[in-house]
Length: 382
Length: 101
Image (cartoon, rainbow over all chains, first blue to last red; front, side, top):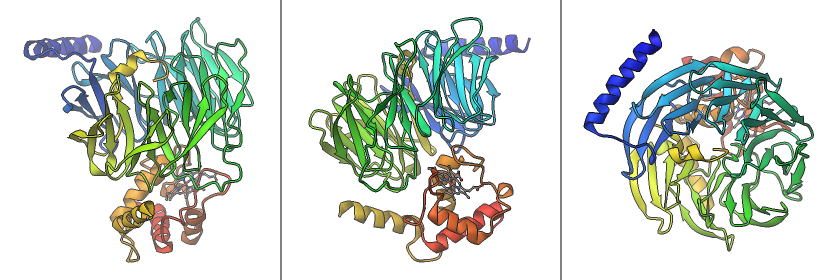
């Protein structure tokens, strides 16, 4: 009854919207406004904000994923909130508090399941993407990080305290969980390659990362860059780096070093180190432009007013920008011609041309953090 | 050279150099930068809950030392390179007393 009323209301709204204008969602995006618990709906082509959606709770560290039709966003809040936002009607379609303290989420390849990883109580909960009803509750007894979707209705995630990676296969009636031990000391984040084959966990407690080949029936942990900081003093880490997306630049991957002013380059096939680039500060995100030719890097507090652009052929820093205090996130347009940058303490999102580095637009936002374009809907691991 | 200048400019702007701690800037530091591990509301994240009710076993002095030196072997970093003793003390009291102070 209740749902019917909501649908009816939605229909009236949608009809109203049709009369005025039809707005396709393919070049839209959402920007997280962490302090106000709101989302700013933006249009990439217009380089402008369209509207604000409010009432999403604590959005510090919030991230989101999109439904395959790019109509719905599933927003994962720090307070354990899971909110389904309809970007066509610009309203909240459903919202639940699913745990006490959560860290991120993913959507299955078929778009039917949404999974959330939780610190408290530690584990992963899986929900029906349509109704947000719980489908599976996988307790890990550990803070759970690095949750990604993998092909075949699977989710992969890692356990901070236990140093394990679990693969949950939800293609059958009951989840089947494969546990892989020996990932390393305190995995803090992880990513999956765009082809869904390789899962890489970054380690806080040791210098190095661990890779798993998900094409193997029994994946074995492979150490990547073991001891990359050997002989150098580790610096205090004021913000954990992120391994969001897979920064693939040609035949190499680029990764942020923990506790060092460096990004690290590895060969995509062998995982052997191919180079290092000294950077302005400790990298937080090292993101490849979609064509792989450039890598944009932002930094941890207190050097977080700067972005450096690295050429992936020469591995040299070719440009430096200072967008303002607290650069938190960068998002490329799907073909990489522009990049949007959130500058939290300036209350602005800046749009740059990635070839000329010219600033093209400035959009006001309240403490903006993550920027998420709808094109993510069609990419594994985002 | 360039980056040194930046740090100084930043430190000066944000915390007002040697002068008395700037409450607004420090509050912001606690919720935004400590918050990246402890949660914006300090309810916990990768680091534990650090709201007043969870810290009764700390004296302001202990807490100040913990903030300045961090917890070695854990992600809790030493803040000595970034803040002064007075600022650490202000943060310690703020954590213990909450917004009342």
